[in-house]
Length: 120
Image (tube, rainbow, N blue to C red; front, side):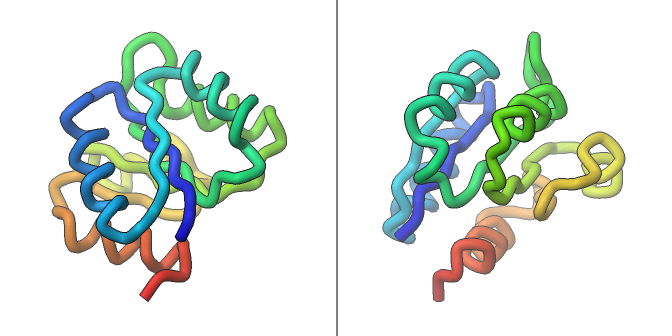
């Protein structure tokens, strides 16, 4: 079991990831924007095992959210999830734990999450 925060402005993507994660018996929190990320971090930062972070979001993008997380001093693994090619993701947020192109599909997503959370 683990606890994952999904940060994505797209409700359908959050729902898709939630379904996959819940099948792994992972507790899921969601945040559509930076303000909600800050609220979640104030409540649950010590219990988070992973943050799944989109890059392209209105107002504060993924890089800004990444900086918020690191400014809080939270050392939780962050996986970038974007429609951008992985090489572009790495240029925008170079210190993330891993990167996921949304076009790679659910199986690749599941494999990355399981590896980070230590699930079989």
